[in-house]
Image 1 (cartoon, rainbow, N blue to C red):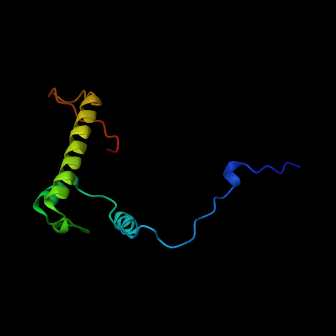
Image 2: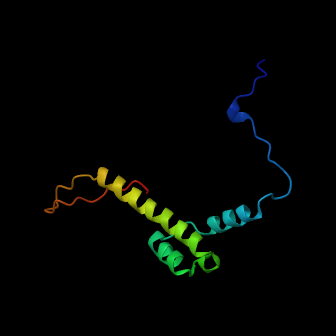
Image 3: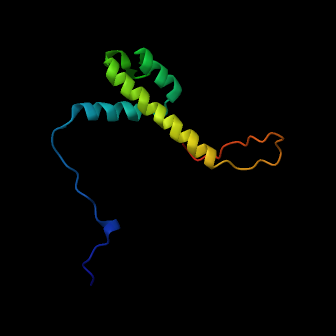
Length: 105
């Protein structure tokens, strides 16, 4: 009889105890309740220091808001560069501009 149990059959024990990082727990809860976010509007709210959905950017310092704005801009630039590389031809279009490949970004 084989006493070895496959990795897929083993369960990992959960860690019990108090929450160590309350801010991370709160962020996780907010993220779970906010499945999608429109990033352009979020960036505008960050810059203006306004509320956006569950997020209150008004309590952040100008430096922190600038850091977030910069990160979002880098994401937009990255996404734009990826979309440019993965365009698929569309035979029914007369324009040379082709639609981007939808890949979940």
